[in-house]
Every structure is written in C-alpha cells, then in structure tokens.
Amino acid sequence: MNTSLFERLHAEELVSDPSLERVRAQARNPLFSVHYELKTILYLGVLLLSSGLGILIYKNIDTIGHLAVILFIMLVSTGCFTYCLKQKRPFSLGKVEAPNPFFDYVLLLGCLTFITLIGYTQVQYTVFGERFGLLFFIPMVVLFFSAYYFDHLGVLTMAITNLAAWCGITVTPDKILRENDFENGTVIITGLLLGAFLEAVAYFTKRFRIKAHFGFTYFNFAAHLLFISCLAAMFEFGDIYVVWFLVLMGITWYFYRKAIQERSFYFMLILTLYAYIGISYMVLRFLLNIDFSDAVIYMAILYFISSAIGLILFLINMNRKIKAL
View 1: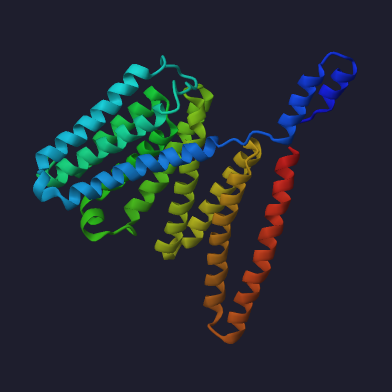
View 2: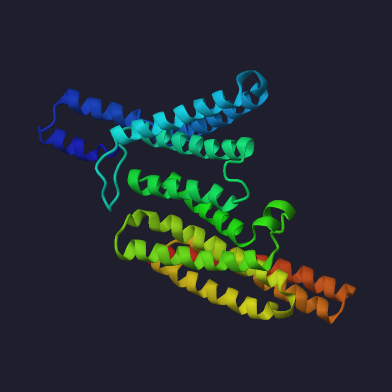
C-alpha cells in the first residue's frame, strides 16, 4: 500500500493521527489473499469426493447392491441440480456471476455424478445396448445446457471433451472401443473438422456476444485439436506429408495472427511448439533420406542445438513484442 497519499493528507490535517497509524499498520502487515488457493482446494475436494465414493462403492458393491448405488448417485445429482436451480441468478447472454462461493462446486459435483450415473447404468445394465453414441450424446447435451444455463466454464470444458469423444465414437465406434485404433485416418480428419468447428463457434460467440467469455475455451480446444490432428496426419499419411506440412504452416500463420490480435503469449507459445515439432519432423526426414551416417547424426544434433537456441530467442522476442502492443 502506498502511504504517501495518506501522509500528505495528514500533513494537511485532513487525516487524524490514529487513522494514519492504522494505515501504516495495514501497510506493514498487508492482507494475503487465499482466494485461488481456496478455489483449488474446493475443486480438489469435489474431485476427491466423487473419486472416493466411486472407490467405496466398488469395494463394497457386493454388500451395497447396484440399485442402492444407482439410487444414491441419482439423489446426489438431483440434489445438486435442484440446489443450483433454486440459487441461480437470472439467465443472461453475458457473464453471470455465481450467487455464492459454493455454487460452482455444487454444480460441478452434480455434473460429475450425472456422468457417473450414465456410465454406471450402461456398464451394469447396458441400457443403451450397442448404441455407444447415445452414451456420450446424452451427457454432452446436459453438460452444454448446464454450462450455458448456469454459466460455468468448467462444465463447458467437460461438454467440449464429451463432444470430442462423441465425434470419435460416432465415426469409428468399433475400432476405438475394441481395437483402440486412434491412428485411424478418419479420426484424424474428424479432429481437424471438429477443430475448425470449435474455432467457428469461438468466432461467433464473440461476434454476437453470446457468452463471449466462453470464446477463449472454444479457441483453446480448437487450436490444440487442429495442431495435433495436423501433426498426426503428417506422421500417418507418409506419402503426402509435405501437403500436411503446408497445412500445418497455414494453421500456424492463422493462429499467429490471432495471437498478435488477442495479445496472447500463451497462444504464441503453443503455436511455436507445434510448428517446431512439424519443422523438426521435416528436417529429420530430409536428413534420413540423404543417408544414415555419422555425418547425418552430427547434423541432426547441431540442428536441435541451434534450433533450440533460436526457439528460445524467438519466444523472448515475441513476448516483448506482445507486451509492447
């Protein structure tokens, strides 16, 4: 705290001696905010509670009974949503603050127990049969609705993750669930399309101010999906990896302009790292196509040393540039 202002007011006899002394005491012992520490502890508490209940039920399932477990999870989820419905503030397309410090965590617990309920009933009673898409589609709809209706970024993140899982299940249900074939080309193309879709949602979210503060979350998922899918395509489609490298450079240029526009060093950092992986892959393929000799190995080592130095200098320079904007 800057006490010079109060000292000047005291010199002009506008602030009394006891008041000035209290200000000085406050400056000597400033308050320490534990806001984010408490929020982290509460989030961990919700996650540990849901995980602990799952472990407890798993170890005592023979004595508790499946119906009792389902009823308990249903009651917890229903109770959480009922509390949120009663406590929530009126809906708005802008940002709506939580009515109290516990609201967000109760909603998070309600969503987690709801997902647990859907998964439990499917595993135990196969209520959706072989229609695995419904297993992800129903929670996805509920999570998106809850995220917008109650204005919760954490639930929105869960909803987008569920959307990605639903897209993957929808395009190749058997291979993903039975063969764990995540290198499937269809999944890679789906990831690219989903990334482009989320980027479009981020744009329209900000353009039309429909929960504009959700834009960063959509943009973040879109960036990672597009970069990872494009790199996976380079590695998977070896015959046309140059084409995918050019696509990667195009995506990098797009997000570079967005990072400058948004003044975001975070996006500058991730696009630099993803682009570096792609460029390094091209360099290594070029060197290996020449020959696999000691000279090539030395050239590869020199490349990584010099490129790492260049990468650090580039990031330092961009950090200064973004701060100066």
